[in-house]
Length: 79
Image (cartoon, rainbow, N blue to C red; front, side):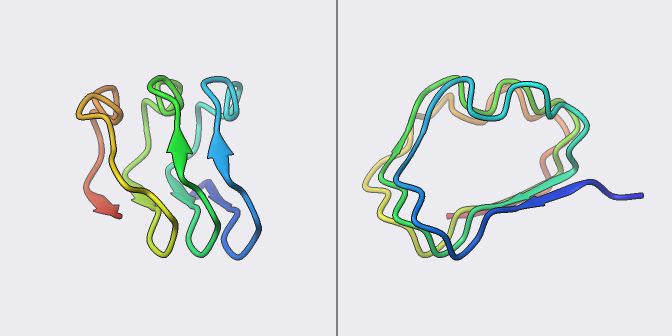
């Protein structure tokens, strides 16, 4: 079965490097409609299998170009 973490519609403001440590089997992560304005550079390093990342409707001004570098299976990214 598909493993999805949906933390949409919360008040998350920042994502730290180890926020998702131990969740390496996720296929999709949804973080829509939060207040995220900072994502540390290694936040997504644990997601080797993730195919879908949703981050729309947040407060991101810029994203490090290497933020998603370890997401080799990534098919869909919504900022």
